Image (cartoon, rainbow, N blue to C red; front, side, top):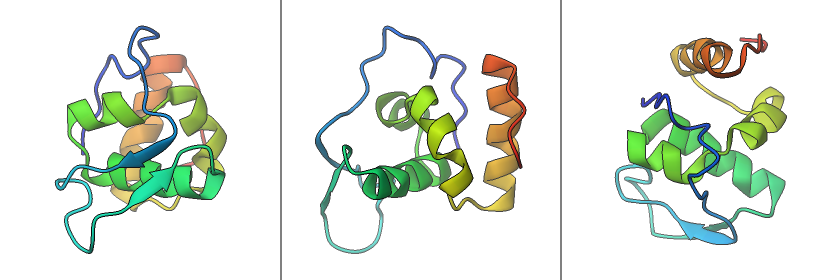
Length: 98
């Protein structure tokens, strides 16, 4: 689980459109793509990247505004959710339900 301090940097361009996840994130099953314009598919990408992604994966795929909007609907392991709750407080001063 990666928690980059610069994930909220507005200069970092985030993935849009149809995306394929790197093997370290999607390590089982066939390769596939997700449509980041579809809320449900975007939530799936966020769940996998927050759980399995490297610092670079998080920077590439996670938009903090989108993360906050998706937060109530994301299924994350308790340790991942708690770590990101703390990280979002550090980044934005937000207290989200953990």
